[in-house]
Every structure is written in C-alpha cells, then in structure tokens.
Length: 119
Image 1: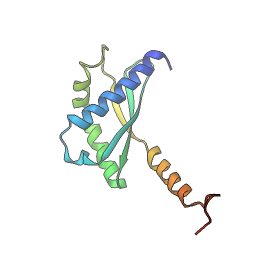
Image 2: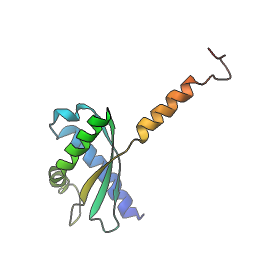
Image 3: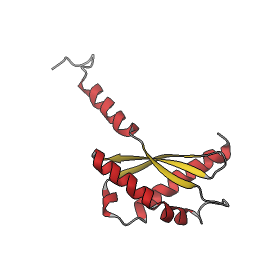
Image 4: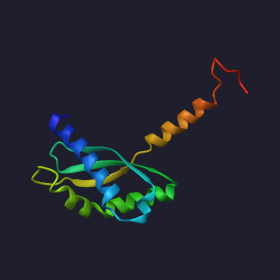
C-alpha cells in the first residue's frame, strides 16, 4: 500500500464517520455504528468501507442497506473534503471484529486467574 492510499484510507474513515454521526438524519442510525476502516483500490476509483454495528443480525442488515442507499449523499459530502478528481465509489461491508473481540474478552473473564480461586 502506498503512502497516498494509506492517507486516503484514513481520511475516508474519519470523514465518513463524521458524516454518519453528524449529518445523516435517520433514527435507525441511533445504534452504535462505527466505521472501522476503509480500503481504496490502487486506482482510487473504489473504496470498501468496513462498518461495525452493535445490534441484532436484522439491525446490521438494515444499517448496511441504509448506508449503501446513502452512497450518493456520502459521495457528495466527501467531494469538497477530498482533493481528488473522482470520489471513490463506496461499498459497505460488515466488520464483526469488535463483537468477536468482546466475546473473547468475556470468555477470558470467566477463566479463573492464578491470583483468585475458581468459584
């Protein structure tokens, strides 16, 4: 990955997070929605946006559909913030790494530690 694509990935993640949190006025986005990372192709024409959603499988599906439907709005909002000829075409993917990390942490919390005896 070049330095330019890495910088663009970080900028996209930050700007899309800001737009989703501040500018999108949809009550379904009241769930915890986090943009975890962005991956731009080498030609800078497409970007995969990884999203973590805390909720049920149905809520995750609805949020992904909502974000995909809002790509035009997101691209219009991104245009003045990016110094590119073209704003990348956005596609959203579910990222479950945060939830899996929480599950692992909960499992680790149930293990007895050497300092305290098992219950």
